[in-house]
Length: 397
Image (cartoon, rainbow, N blue to C red; front, side, top):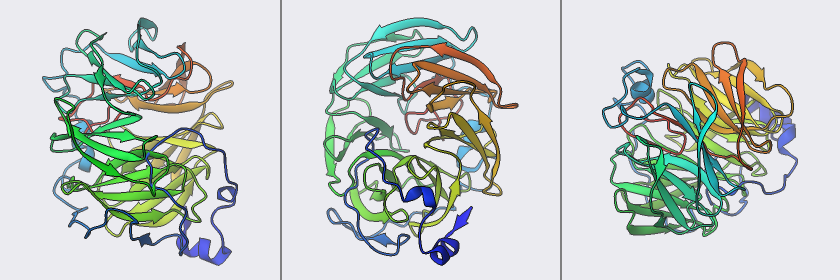
């Protein structure tokens, strides 16, 4: 891990952060490249408001195995998800379709068309619907996870990504192109409130504080993050990561709720952020194109997909260090995915190779590579343990 003190002594962020990369995937938008020390939170240029009293050490985050991921560590599947066949839903962004893979046979068993540019597949808060986020199609396609069949699309503007608030009240549509977060009724998808985030170009992925009062979102095209008061639906603060030349992607909270991990595909590693103070505290190199972040089923490890070098890094939550690195054989571009309900398999889309990888989490061995449509992106592994969904990965807490 590279600490703030080490960066200060060097007078620069990690070397591979100095290279500015071309814009890639569109994600959460928090615009502008402000100056400053590189680790202090700055006041937002729009919205504004006092920081909510988020409690990173709430009872949801500590005192039980798995911390905030306690509901993920159990092998029990909730009644809402119990009837679903073990499948993987793969949105093919460039083919405007979804391929459905059997976790047992590791073969495509179904295929259906979607709206234009499907980006992610997100479980609903009540676990009864999977939503395909059709970005350019301006719609969400509902899928019945018990039958695997799609329903009638629901009109929604620019759904690049989709999350649900921990209380189940709102769906948050990440409208990356429109630079806003749309709070919608979680059941009807009726628009309730639009939060503009013009200082967050490329608004992308997010996670919530342990108590659910705050969300933290990455800004792909400005090297920043934003902090949002969930109850007031108000932008609270902006954080520049390092020199602000990175490309932050996926965001995951540590099991104890006291650290945020933010993948930086331009920097080739993961930022460590203190959510209580909203300041970055260190940088952990993992590999070129660090992109997706996935906790292991026992909440002891964090899997990092390094898309540009075709590898997966394994981080220990306890020590904050990289334990090992798994290489995906041959040309590979591991991107977004999730962990099987029993924790034995890490499923990742091969973004630029029209395939999906099934990786054994005990050995790192590639169990299967399955051909799918073009541009596979935020796939959903289903069913999952837990009580409710937080995000497109299918990880619940």
